[in-house]
Length: 257
Ligand SMILES: [Zn+2]
Image (tube, rainbow, N blue to C red; front, side):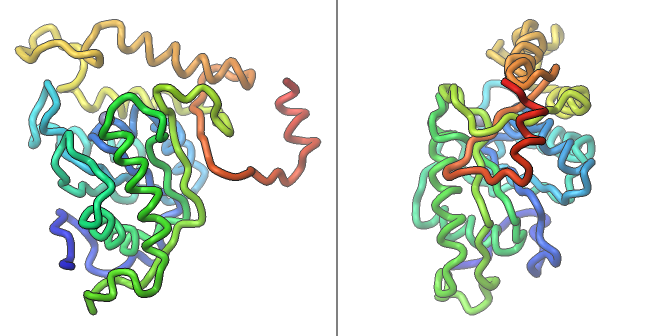
């Protein structure tokens, strides 16, 4: 086991660690799925970060260099404390021993209290692979003797909980987060990935994301979840296990349906 070769990976574990780390398969997955949650969490004073697993180099539009610049721009818009890329090959994210060990190393450096990643019931196989490898690694990285073949490995760290955003086929999230005040910030972060979206001068082939209707679909999707909690825009979160309520009366007074 060697230290993963990742640009800007801190030498020592962050102190304090991150409050929330979002892990996505491809650059822009995070902005599209939980950009509002990240913007809101940063505004509420929580430290946030993003770990992209691949550079999206198999994507139809853009290239590795362009996409890195776009990720940096989106990170500033979302006020992230850190954004890193695992440099795993695109279109090949699997729950393997090698990937688990590399990811555990990075989780131990970033020390997130919470991790949010892809829902397991997804359309893209990389998203399904990411969901599996992230959930499993969050448990394994908390084992004291995991990675102990490397004397330099950072000490064990286990996030308190793994949360799951979106999910193409997921109709029943555990909670819905009001992002009305942060929706414009989310849009800006999404469209920082300029190479992926509509541009009549682009020579690249059309994709689902580059369809001129895509912005209106983003509004529809966020409004769909917003309507369910009486707000304008929202994003869903799923978790395994129950969610404790501090004040059930207050909670259901605010969400009476
Ligand atoms: Zn993706």
